[in-house]
Image 1 (tube, rainbow, N blue to C red):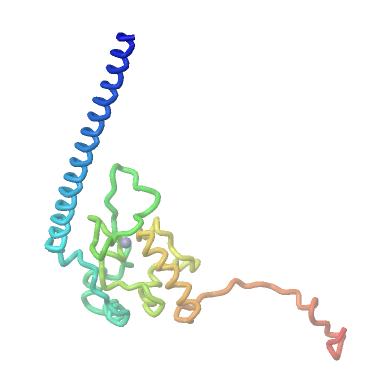
Image 2: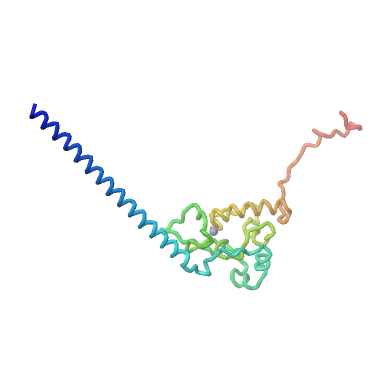
Length: 204
Ligand SMILES: [Zn+2]
């Protein structure tokens, strides 16, 4: 009996010590966690202060909103001619990429949180005076093929996916408003199906 009781005492004792140890470890963990979290909060706060104090390169800042009228005047200006000449805005653009073969798709976007986030922003994003709007016809026409009237692909022009979507919207809107004219395909109809010259009152 005495051996059994001793054994029991031992097991109980080991359980207690185990529990106590667990408790300590848990407490220690919780303490360290809370300490770490406090430290992390401090770091985040410091980082937050750092970003707010960090100066943005003025050439990469895109928070300024430029009206379409300014963009239309810019496309007629001497500054535009000196920059692009008679070429479309995408003609001399070349994207930076890793390796020799360029990626099939262009970037998702070039501007994040109002700042240019890449070294080679697309032809629309790099010039802040180029605004995609249905009234800015001279810019939109540079992205329409002169041979078949189709919208040029982003693989040819190199504009990012976001600006490409904006371009599609602007061009469709321009066609709806009539600022861009386009030819509808010629269709031949068999008018005899609707009109018979023998019939006088057009009832038959
Ligand atoms: Zn872009």
